Length: 392
Ligand SMILES: [Zn+2]
Ligand SMILES: [Zn+2]
Image 1 (tube, protein in one colour):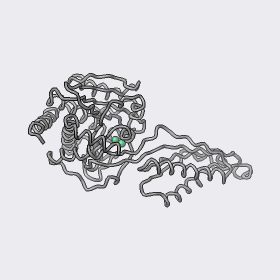
Image 2: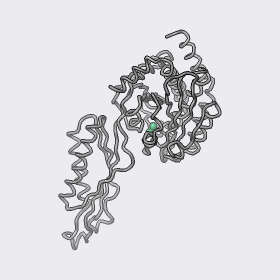
Image 3: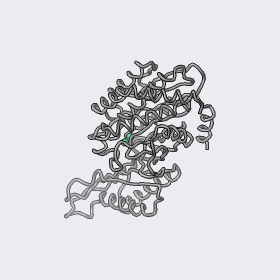
Image 4: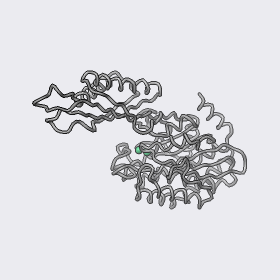
């Protein structure tokens, strides 16, 4: 690396340290004011306001979403447009137990540190505030409306129970299965009834059998949301909801069909009617950009951050960042904010989000993210490799 580049990266990292009180405050304020899917009004005001105050040109309500925004810093020279993604939605009941308050804080501080320490940067730095990651698919709506059309690469860092730069994620869909039968007195006229609960039970068990023959890369899990009204009425309605996940789009589609067929079989064998309804938006699998991953790894090495020993597919979930990774080269590194047992969406994780160890992780990964954006803005050859790897 040229000496100059190293110096600029050092000053970017120093700037992140100098901005630590701001990062801490953004994390705390969001943590104390958790907002759900598409209701992140305070979070949008706080983060976009901070970016605007620090020289970014902010556009609110991007993609006609109340709580989406973009904040842009245009450089003096030509260069790529690098998006730093900010998530800020919380979970029902347990608030910021996925640590999106930290994601927003990291993304704001990385962007401002870059702008301050790298004056006259080439290309464009765009912070994109993406609402509703936890089930609402904010990024999917924003992709559809074209917000990412002129973005060359996208990055964000996510708190976790482990530090891992390159990981994959499952595609996921949420499907509701409604079986409709016929109510009748369960003792006097059982033969007049058509038992929808039986259809649901058969379906549930068919999925359990299917699970034995499923590829390792997939998950199917579900619940009953309705199973009847009273024991003396043959249930006329049973409703189940299943999540189906897989690492590859082809197998995901195949598996979806198999699960739906299991429901069809259960309906047929009981004489029930079946309605299949997909809820919400389908999240696609995350295909991480490994060239961006290499650049990120070089940066964490200079910061003394080490990765845990995990494969790309261990302990993974699903996110709408997957959809983004299908249209733009994307990196979504994770970092530990507690021990291996402090896992996302738990009460322990919630504590870790405001812990000293958590903060240390957040600082390091914010620096690494800003340094990687620096690489992408300035190293044209790297950007060519990133795009080639994306196309492959
Ligand atoms: Zn989450
Ligand atoms: Zn999350």
